[in-house]
Figure 1 (cartoon, one colour):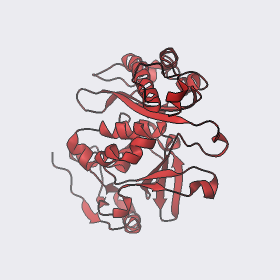
Figure 2: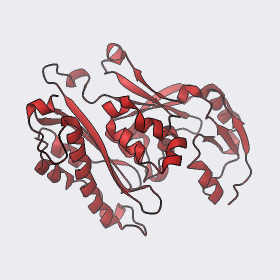
Figure 3: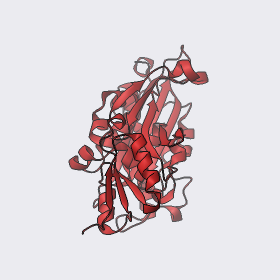
Figure 4: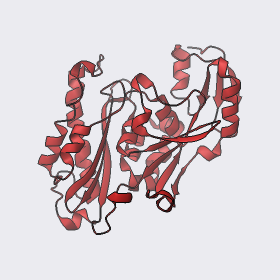
Length: 328
């Protein structure tokens, strides 16, 4: 299908992009990054806009780097910044991300196909916030902070507060998502930091792929911190099962303070759908809401098992309770 006519502008800086958004505010402007979400929607009529602002040449928004000095400024630990124009392929291969937030790297590796991963951007995926997209769940599990920039400056927002139902977000009409920041879960900040209790951390993403679209029928991202053989922190994000990515607090609460053996993980995973009404679960020709809720528990357990193995260096299924393994 041929998309409707629209005006096209290319911005070379964030300031220029923001100026263009303001100047064309009455023309339903949209931002064009990777385009793998916007362009198909334009062709099918799902997206209606008069102006497209191409931001792909803003180099400042590209790449993965370490942000140091946060601890000195505000008691937070060092964090890693991921530019919004970073491609899924770059994120999946980034050694720093695989080290501190492997659930993000694994989710990026699951996005679409090779072409989509080489062209699609992290910021575009999060801003589009498809209810079955992979990265939003991983952003929740990584406790990511999103940086939103407008003409009045920038603001930071926790990923959990960013997503709304059915692809909605808290991104303003004249704002850009410029950066995603994640911290090392094995290096807790503030009151959570205890030099005498070395922490091991690991994350993972497990996904049942929709057979037709490549999106997640159900996907679960998990991030765990362990000390002295017990779980000290647990964060899980799920996608595909509801009209927005969601945390799994019942699972998280069932893990903290416990030995992460197979029985614990299975018991916790059974609670994955505890706070979701079956009538509210997504349902389509590929899977009913009831089946998605069943898959949610299955893939929660798989993500947790892989996250523990990642944190301890054990193989999935092994009992990771030896202190020398946990505190590697």
